[in-house]
Length: 313
Image (cartoon, rainbow, N blue to C red):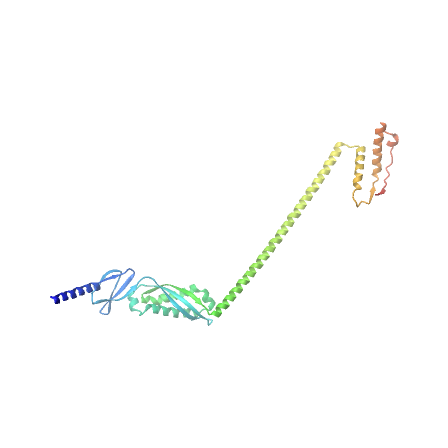
């Protein structure tokens, strides 16, 4: 009785193991290679799959998602015989699980070695300056070669990026000095241009200010002259409108004499000959006011003799 139980237990275990080997669940974005007696049979896709237990075996499970693989720095010699270390990053995706399993032993290692050799060929035809400034060109050339070579392996290279390009330390120091000198040169040029522009603007401002000041003085002088002319015309018109006689003119003439003698610098002034006529007219006016009638001796024609009598203060 115990032997029968043991046999039943063994049978149950075998059936359970067979069921486990028969039912294969493949995750999403994955694939599995099935071999029967060591020969490729089919590729299992995502989902529930049935295989023949103890006859079909799972050779390899492959992730079909895009993978990112960074490669360590590789020494590369440029055209001008300088050694630079270049880090690369490869973005690839397996498109054919069967080819990735049977066409190449290790596609990661194959991609790495192909990347290194291709990168050395590309950089070997460039100098250091072009290498540092042509990342996009290097990426495009490297991706084209890798995509063409890995197509038969069932792998598609989506992107290739140069993560870092490190020249020798001495070259880095020289480049930093050159860049610092260029920056100092540009700063000096910009400062000189700023000073020059400031001087130009200041000179233009002073010129414009002088022009405006001269125009203002000219207009002020013109307005002043016009005002004086208008005042003279007004006075002249007022005198003619009032029709003054000789007596008023003589009196006004005498009132102007003290103004002629004003000032510390007037040490000598000349009395014009017309002062005699003014005095005659004024004395005649005063005599008429005192006698009520003009005196014949006053109204007698007296020849006007022009004379100049100097007077010293």
